[in-house]
Length: 233
Image (cartoon, rainbow, N blue to C red; front, side, top):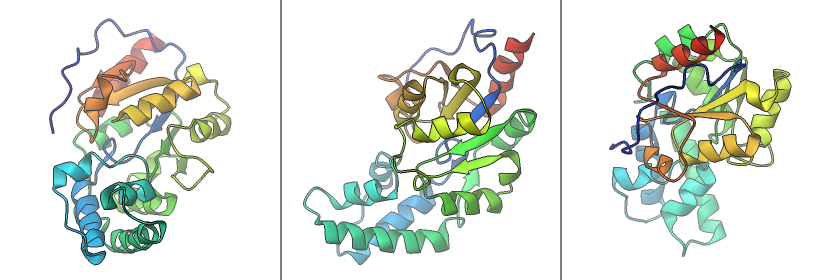
């Protein structure tokens, strides 16, 4: 997937003074779940008698939760009943296959280990039980004190409700936190919550950074500690 032609971070060491809490998106940021999502969604479309979609088309639909993903895939003409049936099939299929091909992105394990002295949370629009199961299955759960999913609150990202909950959990102010994500949804969430935002170039929706630039844009999670450590010196 092509990354947006944005400048690399320069002169930012020291900008993130006081940052001590990290929030991470899941799909496209910590884990490469694209193939399992695509296969599950196309299985649901086939079940509903709809044509399957190209992989690249599905990647662009991911990021706002399972219900929105299925609704977008079915199209504007889908009834509420069809959307619900499609969602139920998608979730059941994905539950059985969500770790078939999903892996941590290169540099994620190393980066999390380097950051492990800080309080960290996952804030995703994926259902929380699925999120926890994937983190457990990939041996990433041990890095996070809190995991919030798309059904943990009444609203989903980019609403700041989840980010505010993380701030309360860690007794942090917005300027003491940074949200790491791969899409414009994550940037808007951070802006709505008043926190810093770090984007990663390798994820599902980096083209959205053109219109919604993050405060920091990285190629690997292993780069993040140097910016936060730089703020400490």
